[in-house]
Image 1 (cartoon, one colour):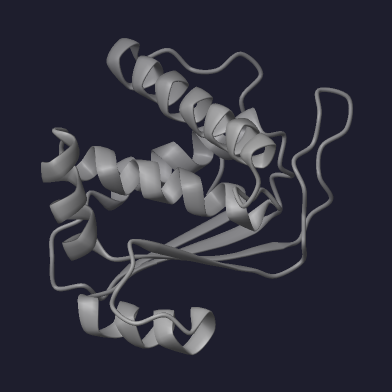
Image 2: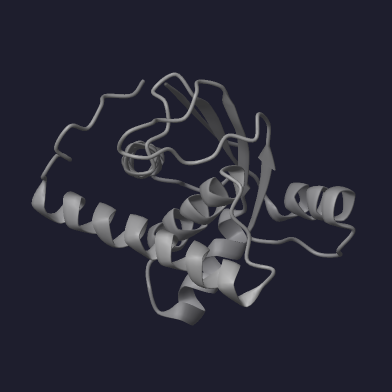
Length: 163
């Protein structure tokens, strides 16, 4: 498993925490240990350019996802095939503003955005109400489970090590 994290935002990002979150989420979603994902942290200018180019919407956004091999979550009985999940792009400046409005830490917001971006890579969407309930429910499960693991230092039973 390759989780590549690059910070070009000019802001401090706890890359180790993002790495641990992704490892937790990928294990939880039964993604093959040979799947690859990249996370790129960019400044507002770079995010705005991507937002305009790919979504035809002005201004910077918080997170964008660029799926590659259209992998889907696995199950207890069948993990995903190996492949390229794709890229998640996060803007820490936008995340910081949203964190302040939401009343939680910038790291928590960046973790939420990373989990959200990962779910988009795995084919989830929130255009329809039912899709939104499903996606946001899984996103909540990831974040709550990860927070519990971080607080209590418990490894997932049967969890895999990812590099």
